[in-house]
Image (cartoon, rainbow, N blue to C red; front, side, top):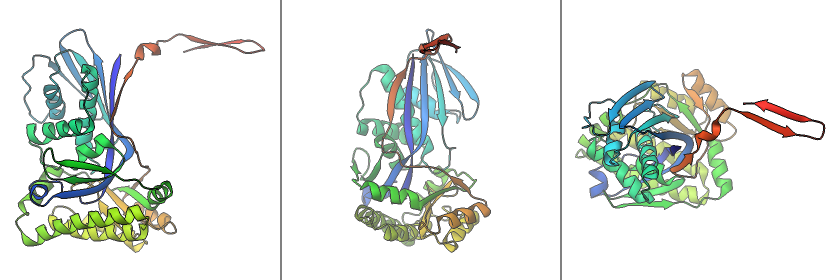
Length: 356
């Protein structure tokens, strides 16, 4: 028996950074975003002994613990140790982790991995967690137990899935508003958005800390307020299907967000963004805290190919993607059914036998 958890990664369109304390506590934050068809996976294979063996498939790393372990957070698979501790895992198991994007890509990878682990462990232990309980636990483990700087949006986006407008007022005061968008609008939006990997990753915690330190500065604070207001405006335009306005507002949001911290952008990102706009893109933004990762650009259909080509020439890597409207899920895979054997098929002319 294998217990699996899967959680989708996310892209944010507007409001990123307003979900971080103290802004969201004092002013209220709001983020417009969606999950996409790239995922973090957690597989748990129960063992008969007290060993816990963790395999990070992306980093080709294996670490062994014991169920009686006094976990020490030393920078080595701390997310896993914190999840094991939070879920009080006292039985031996093997844990396999894999993610479709690297850490620091701006798609919420670390939080999504945490959600995938927690939902798989809850399934194994027979614990029922609703969406808010799961997202809140993921936030607690990552932000409070591990002291990793960041906001609320990643845990809630990954848990609930779909296109949401999420409002934040601090711990236990988050409201996820699913948006009912017509299919034709959704298809058109996806067609007009390009996802481009810049080739660099970032340490989001450092950028978040710099943003928080700028909270008391007038220009940075005003920029945060503008980013929040733009999230509401983008939500309204998206619901109405005014995608040209949506694309232009992306640009306004990016210009405002850059004023929140000097670490949000860099010359390479600015060059990629500038080339995309020259080729006809209406607007876009760097996903996540900033500094690197994925760049999302809105392009009218008749210049989409030109924008993609120009960004590739400038060093970007075009990435295929689509919306994922489902959130975190768990299931049980009966791998014993995968035993080698033979398959026979009786057709009118003869019987066929295949060894598998």
